[in-house]
Image 1: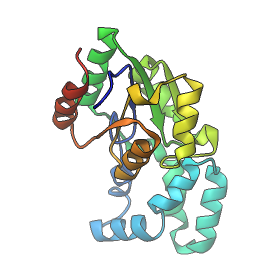
Image 2 (image 1 turned 90 degrees about the vertical axis):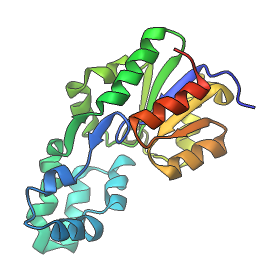
Image 3 (image 1 turned 180 degrees about the vertical axis):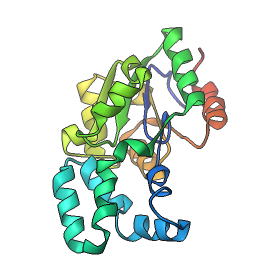
Image 4 (image 1 turned 135 degrees about the vertical axis):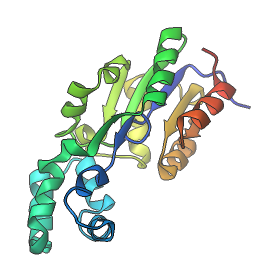
Length: 204
């Protein structure tokens, strides 16, 4: 049986912030097929995740440009025009966060896979990021989800009792890892589904 929730931990990208490289690259490539080929074979999710784990933009760009010199301009745009990948807040989830915060019943934190170099941009753009009681950014810690270590670090740094914490993320691998660590979870798919599942765990 689930224990009483005291702490709610939110992912950011895909849950509260609409980040997607396609927001940028649809303006760079002439066809969606060319864009998808580039994102699946060149600037891949795995490559980007290494920056979330602490690798510098400069090193990442250099490695990939050497490997794919004919894509040097497009590779350079990934971090050179990174802010264009941010479409804005996911307003429905921000509203949920606001309501939880206003209730005063729960501690709220963020655990995000995000590069230390680009996270300050988000801090400057979105007021709601400052609503959290604490934020753990993977790029600052040189580790990332779904590694169990980053969950344990989150719990210890903010003195969170795992059995009374609820973790919300749009990535199934991260959800699986959180469950293995002992957290209660919601696999985020959309605002309506998230709110319905939250109502099974908390009141606000």
